[in-house]
Image 1: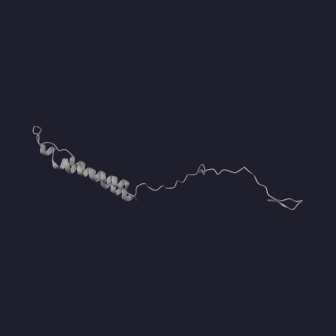
Image 2: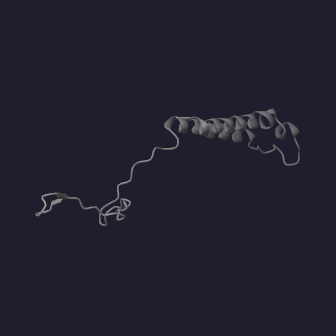
Image 3: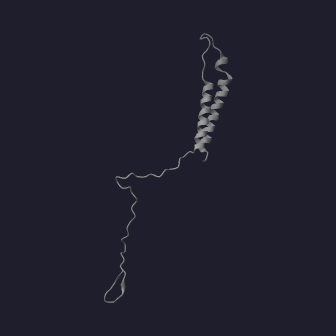
Length: 108
């Protein structure tokens, strides 16, 4: 504000329509831009459950691993279609996949 010398009144000056737009903050050149750390998507507990799930899947695959026949001339169905390969191995793999699902969707 400024005072008018003759009348002694204060004069108010306004600028209509000339508003300054706020510009987005940009890092200055030559300086490192500091990024804020984003929180991790999974917590430590989630990774422990995921590791346990991978372990169960690995155990299931180990149970399903094939063995060799004692003699190449003899076919032994009890080795190929054993309870360990047909039932226990897939059960461990399925349990590992369910545990993986649980670990991914579990809240922190």
